[in-house]
Image (tube, rainbow, N blue to C red):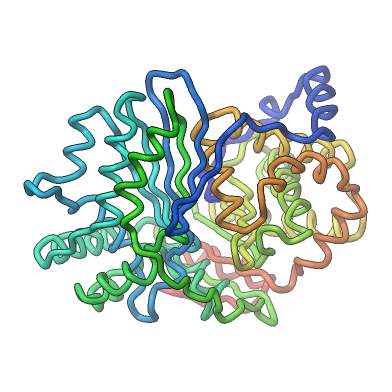
Length: 456
């Protein structure tokens, strides 16, 4: 998952010994989820229902198809299709469905990822049925009209053109393109202005028919009152959704380059923006747990790097590991003065090398395990987080046991297994390094990592 830059200081890394000991003891025990009902409609749509007693309840709908299925040259098609469904959908009277949701006090947002399409919101408990049926009208009976299609497509293109000059945006776009060369994960979910202009209304209608099918959909929500009555009401709306044939998830496998790829985007900036990393593994891979710990281990290392590179206790940087249906990636994100960028890349390479050689800081490793477990457990304590985590087990086909046994698997990871996983999946000679900043300063510094390509 994407994480924004974090400002980390040594003081913030201080952890109570009592709290750490308690949390560590909990890691080795299975996670217990609240009771819920699991049912399916005849068309294959799956429903998870959690009883609640709140006045307002959350809901989420997942469609297990995403932007990875965008046709070549028409990147952004899935995002455009989804946005049209939500923002341009109307009821029989011509009123926007979004306005209808607002009238009854409900909220709805959406997100398109490479592997899935998410609809998330909340509703007054006594209007949940109405809310889900309005969502059903958006999804089951969308209206794709020429006028709204053109205006929304142009709006997305304008948004992308506006962001293209932002260094964070530009480095992310280039990083993904270099890392996933030829693989669908290499394009942004929203596409770019050129690929959006290649999309016609017929493309949207066809993409909807291919991706939005009930046997690829999972709905989860909290509710009050009689669930059978709610389920029956949902069946009338959602049951009319026609079952289809899922598209095969067969794409060109991303391959690491034979050597480091170093790119500089020439920009006049007070602080350079840098991203570097490598391909990782798929969700559910036996090494995915070790790589989640690696994310925390690197994050915990950042304050020390700041002291060694810049003589500071703070750093604007983050470490993240993405695991998806296909192999994802490990990424470091940094904002720092240009003369310091190479020093931080070097520290990253040194840290990976030390881990691969078995020189692991045991205290940092145990803290990284604890934080990895706590991140999942904390998300489960939030109703939205719980629904998301549960639906992700369907998205990545890992089963609910992935959540239940997460702590047990993290607890069983030894420094030796951590070392082996890091050594197996990462090479310090096959990195993608993308930096936006003054080329004159950056080129000579980064040349030690490989041939530098300059992009204006």
